[in-house]
Amino acid sequence: MNITIIAGARPNFVKIAPIIKAINSAKSANKAIDFRLVHTGQHYDKKMSGSFFDQLGIPEPHANLAVGSGTQAEQTANIMVRFEQELLDHPCDVVLVVGDVTSTMACSITAKKLNIQVVHVEAGIRSWDLTMPEEINRMITDSISDHFFTTSELANENLRKSGIKDDRIHFVGNTMIDTLLAQRPHFIKPTVWDELGLQEKEYLVMTLHRPANVDEEEKLKSLMDEVVHNTQELPLIFPVHPRTAKILQNLGVAHPRLHMIEPLSYLEFNYLVEKAKAVVTDSGGITEEASIMNVPCMTLRDNTERPETIDLGTNELIGTNPEAIAPAMKKLFSGQWKETQEIPMWDGKTAERIIEKLLEIYR
Ligand code: UD1
Image (tube, rainbow, N blue to C red; front, side, top):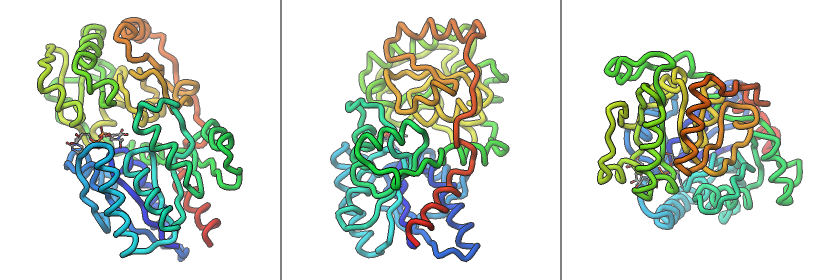
């Protein structure tokens, strides 16, 4: 079985690393399986892409479609045109896509139109918020995939309700957590730690990049102001995503306790999260990682496609109204934040289960 694996943007890299490792193990055990890794080039900076490959031991991609930035339509179209050629030049049995980024959707459509089997890892999750490009990507990818690897019982249920039969739904867990558990002993102290004299549980980490939070200058400014004014005397470390950086250039937000830094590598970022008092974020993946590491997590969104991080993890939906931040911080500082519980199947063995299943399906 020849699998073409797609990776395009930062969270994809974290999700494919253990899958590649599992394929290599199966290969070493003489299983008939091989892969070709295609990087679409949606994320291209060293900080957004290269450092993830280095740290997570992901091999050099066999092809880089180098699509770069653009509008949603430009990126989608460029990925499709280039991936179609890639598939014609290098036919495969299965295309494996992960997550919900533009590359996920564009490559699944392209593969399906060439009658190639598509499998989706992290299938079935839904925010039901169609203003998010990721939700559209999830819905379209799931509407044409052949097999669905899921992270939660709710994802299974969402897929069943859309008419997908049980024999195509495989509840395997979360490959992002495979990576987290494998890399946790190797986290790296970022230079900002000593530069700022940070101490365990004596600072907060923030990340913001969703269009709904960052594309409107006033909204972004009021969210940032409100967070920084409610973190008592603690420093707030904000690794800034390029999308957010562009908007911040004109905003002039500054505060002595607010430290805006470049995006961090995976091992450095998770070092900071593991030791933080809390994380404030609008990312989905970070809510999962914070939950597993039992770090309080406030999500600045009105919905989530990952409700298990709320029911079982440390995540709470604070919303996007800046007024909701003060009460949440009060709860944190009074020591009343919930503790995490075990999340079914998030045990570090998801990628092995995926490859085992694929070998069974595509014998
Ligand atoms: C994308 C994903 C999002 C994911 C996020 C993680 C989609 C629709 N969104 O959002 O789900 O959580 O990645 O980072 O796929 N840029 C750089 N350098 C890079 C990459 C991007 O400067 O290496 C700039 C681009 O010029 C662009 C902006 O960042 O203007 C946004 O990049 P884009 O890929 O469009 O979407 P993200 O907001 O990163």
